[in-house]
Image (cartoon, rainbow over all chains, first blue to last red; front, side, top):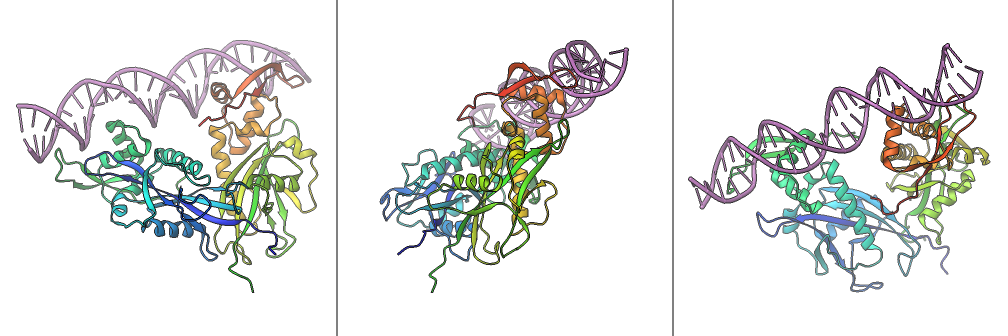
Length: 221
Length: 221
DNA sequence: TCAAAAGTGTTCCCAGTACACCCATGT
DNA sequence: ACATGGGTGTACTGGGAACACTTTTGA
């Protein structure tokens, strides 16, 4: 006979990448979904997630299920929100602590995905299991807000990047074109990047300067 | 023999009021703490909180423990963050979902507090149990950020208020004086208040106009 | 009539935006 | 030489901050 059933804890993660099919193409914001192989919502796409192990932190659980889903380590990982409505799962009561993450496209390309995992355009996700549609909307909103006043976009790029690269991923996140001249000035003024002194060769035009992310000051804001 | 022990879920709440000892005095930002009557941290002050009941939402649990602690209904209630480090409680593993709330000073004055509950100045809390110091700092940071770009300060006032009242609670939250002229213009331009057409009599000086909060537009941002 | 808060007017500055224009490279 | 993205210059704008000033009341 079950005693007073304490709600179960799960950790789920919304993982983003900005993917370019070919070099020089515009990038698209994408996220991986997992096809459910059990009831409820059998066959539906859902966010990667799973139970919290007794000896791991919430953040570690998110990192673990990110690794299990995509084979990747996140370049940015942050708690989003905790969803705990009583009826959000039709069977047992589950409280889901949701994280969101950014991974690099080049790493995501190399990683092998499982059978039931696929990347979807962030603005064209199918109808998901549970309340995961709502969760994705929250994550998108947060990502789009934060890209404006933080350096999170750096997490999507390799260590050296051009300002066009940085603008490209930012535009993909916002699905909106930005003025290149103003973008340059704002980024330079923010102090979040510094030139490496090197230039990117092999392009079709004037070689752009390469930048790196400046040392992360802790305790900022 | 215990099977794999799933971490316990608790809900805690950081409750704020802006308290004025006497009419006309400057207000102070305060929060209620509860003295622990059990181990661990017996005798230490801690945030009000308790277990999540199986049939209530997270928000309802926060509202319930707010009511149990202060006898009040919150005028604003919002999820803050979920804390789940493995060693945050020395005994069992507990994941705490934390809310923060605003209550009205006049209601808080009327409500009776329990024996082991007391209000503390938000910037002078004693050393708390568990990681509750850290939680209070998060809540303060969020409150101070949000008072700048939302209408949450209205939640601390009665239905009709003067702009000086509104400025007063805002100053208490920020612990910083604001320019009355600019504050007025900003609030008026924001469209979050409208004049009632009435004036506050009985003051020592020119009677200020009374305002009310405008109808809350849902779907704003 | 005076003190003090209510309320208005004005100026300065900065950051965001738009957009013209020059620069340097591969083809 | 020319197309194209890299990079600079410049002008306009709106909002925040500082602060002078007028208004209206109680004492």
